[in-house]
Length: 472
Image (cartoon, rainbow, N blue to C red; front, side, top):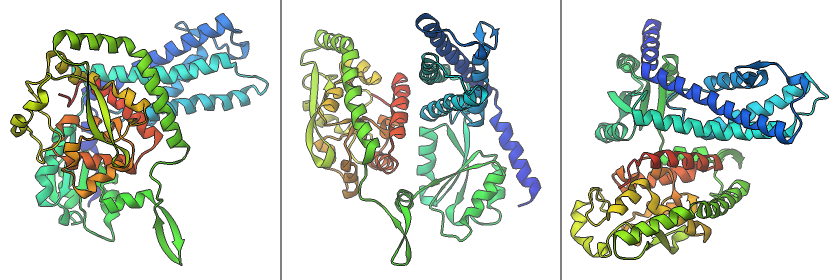
């Protein structure tokens, strides 16, 4: 590939990246970060001056626009580091857990800097802790709010130009998935067998793409050569991994009997992270029930006043290790809804006859439609979390009817405790077309589980629920 072609591809990609809407979005996020940091520091300074000693003179660097100079130093460092971490890019703005970690590292690094600046100085905890924890909480909350407002106003949403490499028989399926479930637009395609041909890179760059998504690349000693060529041209590469590749990522390299092997541990969820996950489940469910109790009462009254029947609806679901439990929801249908289901089966849009959902289901009450669109009908499952049947995050439990239609590999999802929300809920929810789609997302969650992943899914669930996406 000639150097001129690569440079042309870089210029084309850069031109796409600098859209006016995307820039507006980045500016809105930056302003939101500044406001959140300012609020956190104002609260910290108020608490410090009111209940503790005022800041010592060594760190009195003057006042600018009503805020101390030390604040502007923190704010400037935060914005620069966030920019270097690409947190003002559309595809990274929702990476809330990483943003919280980076912000925490900035504050912790400030302790080291302050020690070298003045070794005898003891940073007042009454100022540091509120500023640190307040900054993390408010920056994440403000970024969530800014993203919601920008999405609602449809400002700065970026269409990603995607080039697809796959087998011919999977082309239409993958293109449909990409364009329906993401902001990607497929602008070109190559058969997987031709991915390493000399003219492949020219074809890709002529499409002015930003990302290449490849599935089923053939075995090739120089398979990484395509990656390095795309990287030189400023184009990202996404690989759809096989189950074998995902297993490789879970394992660790070891020598056994003089042979290089990859050891994959038997335990799925274990260690202190999983223990902390269960503690968060119990504490989070208890606090949620206490804080949301007025909302529970209001919803119960609306259900009783608008239709006959009980407030709650329960159904047998399959949980950990195939154990059956009763999952609770607020009732959203009329009392005879289950008797009417048989005559509505033909309206089920999924290919395998499971995940039974009808967008305009006449069995749903007026208040039920609101509860489903806002996912408020799921709140009683906090009781299931307290009882140990469910977790806040995990694979969604299926009914006995749906589990009866599982293929054998689908049952792998029952090796972990089910959850109120999960990767399925933030990746399409009711818009997913088949049980295979759901099972693949669940297996991805199991293979890549971490406490950080759970926190990211909880925050992303909040964003999805507020927009009522994919729920009916």
